[in-house]
Length: 171
Image 1 (tube, rainbow, N blue to C red):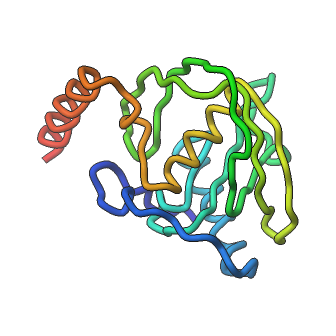
Image 2 (cartoon, rainbow, N blue to C red):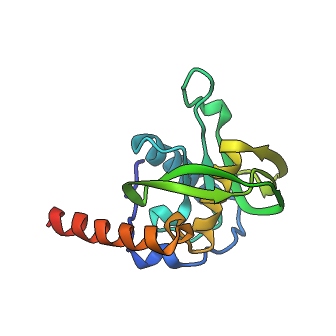
């Protein structure tokens, strides 16, 4: 089922998400709905808070070499923790909760993440480049932050101005 993606400046996006304690059918439904929602919005990642559920759950599904998002490549991460970061890279990021806006963000190039899958099995993933960016971007949501907070003050002011105008034009 496709759920509504909440957008900036919705206050829920500022909430710090809580750890999942029960790996049950409710969690599986949430994960399935998040996948449907992300695909419907042409996203490559989604955190549960973006569908107004403050739980430490995220999904990532990057396109492969053929530019296809293969469901076999889907990462479903519960209670993820980055245990190692190094290097830096700049990547142009966008966000389903900040539609129509993208900007360069500096993040770690190489990371190691520990998380649980939908059945509560512990996993470790080492990644770099775009996948590392996607992990860091989605995990920021879990701590109540958005990628626009990483922008310089000048870029952030420019964004706020454009965003307010866009919201006004919608009305």
